[in-house]
Length: 353
Image (cartoon, rainbow, N blue to C red):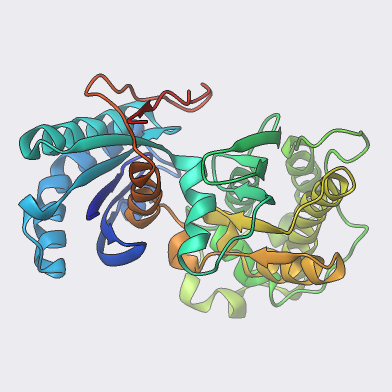
């Protein structure tokens, strides 16, 4: 089933074609440079850019794949969570393609797509845990199958990716700054006592990262020499940053990842699973990838982490999950609604069974 996937939940416009569980072609338009000027994503600009680039991206996708538009048999689109205006642009485009081709439309939960696309490269074994780490979300799930997913815990305030980016901003690194924190952290030495492991003195599986941001802010207030006077040349970042700053980034990364590991370990004491999927934009972080690789070995479970290209927002994950659900006979009508961040996404598929 040749499935078109459309992703416009935030500031990346991603389209892909998937057939038989394999990627036929994909294209992606990033808005990172545009929003870097403002130090964060501007929703109005993001939605306008999606509207501007979608038609051209579809033409490019078809050209790369060698397919004709009439070959598309299913249209899958991110319905949420995300920025409402951006979601609406993608949803409107998907409905137009679906209606024009007279093929089924299926809305996709962006968070589930991040986790389950790992199966494209590595065979998942259910039941397993799913740890979603991104700029907007930090969620822990029990994955029983591709369509049986239970939320175990979530962030109560900032997501882990937001914590990375905001600390990067504190030291005057460019947006998005998480990648630069990671680069410095790999050259640093961890001081396990420098920052607290956030929100672990409890019995739940939720997360909170606001406190550790305050701890970093207080540390920098007493060590202002670690703050760049202006945005550094990122090509020379490791050369320009003092060792003390690299150590701070390593210690900060350690504290964040340790808090994730503690909550995951806590869930393993309560559940029997075969492994853990770690996915989302922050799963590109080299510190986190190594930590969970070691963690899974220590707990004698499997660990699946998608390749970095599949961790960031992309159309492949939407098309891939869309094909799986479509082959199960699930679909939506054209009255499918976008669901912004903060609202639960209903399982409201129409079944052919």
